[in-house]
Image (cartoon, rainbow, N blue to C red):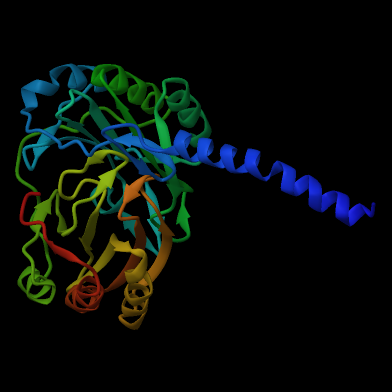
Length: 330
């Protein structure tokens, strides 16, 4: 009997067993009741965030060593501005509110769990030690990237993420990483922000959205229209899915712009083209999440020019994405 005939007969004999194995494998991969497939993993049905108040997060505030504020009634937000860093990019002395504003956010869910996510500024010589501390305490990192071009000293940004039923433990894990950096204590409170020496009315007319003055930095925000999920958790509007534009006044109506646009894959190229046509520099293209749906991409951007001219260029990019104005104070 020839070798090829022997192989043919062997294959025929194995066919029923292979077919049965295939059925068994398919059955093993079928979703359990009440679950769905997300990025190859079985996950519970989507869970909604719930409203909380600042008092619900007192333990988190104690663990972090500073108080935060509520956004949209569901997001407990805490800022960690790197006022200790003296960063220069493109000849501009970068103020903390422009691009050095590390922050973390906590959200409570209907199943009693809590999600943590944030974007943290670290100096290059702090990055590895902070990463080790977060990983030791179960805090995940979902991105590592830059917000600025050719800055001195070298600065990095890392996105942190956590999910569990003990928000205070997560806050302690975060604090362990922050303690490996020179992040200063809470800034002093009191007094209003300095006036913004820019044509704010012109900027807002160009963008079609009202902004806000945060510490003398003008900020204008847009949020995605879609419902965004991260795994089985529905994200509150704007959490990890915001297009944010920060303007630092320079002089004579000019500003330094630092910000990012939130995009789906199909929007990326139109946004990049619109930005470059408007003279805005591209810094980084990356993701903030690992299991978001729809999948979002973010492009960090930079410009130094007339502030209204920058805003007009941004409007073309905004119009290429499925976003709505976030509103003042969001």
